[in-house]
Length: 133
Image (cartoon, rainbow, N blue to C red; front, side, top):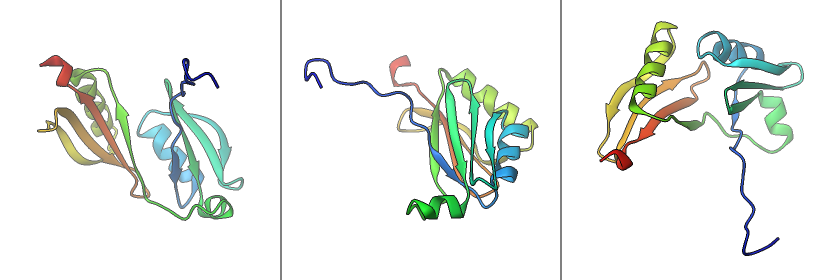
């Protein structure tokens, strides 16, 4: 490893805990607009994606075999503008996604809303507008 040229990382891939991989994946695909890439509940893991965002959905037996007993989780999606946040909110609301909070400018300079999946995992969608000020 060259200290003058440190390794860069790709976007992380969160592991989303689910009671049933097939049902969770169907919600992400049919309600949140993701694409189903591979996997099933029998194997314990599935991959879904939307653009550059990739997620793995895993069931309890898969997670516990690796010592991961956690959940539900919260993950953040960083969009490119307030308009994109509002547009995704409208898309998900029209698809009858579980909306936890509507878009709003927060004192910490994020424009954000929150949604939930079937297993109580939270998705916080935001745009950091500090650079817009």
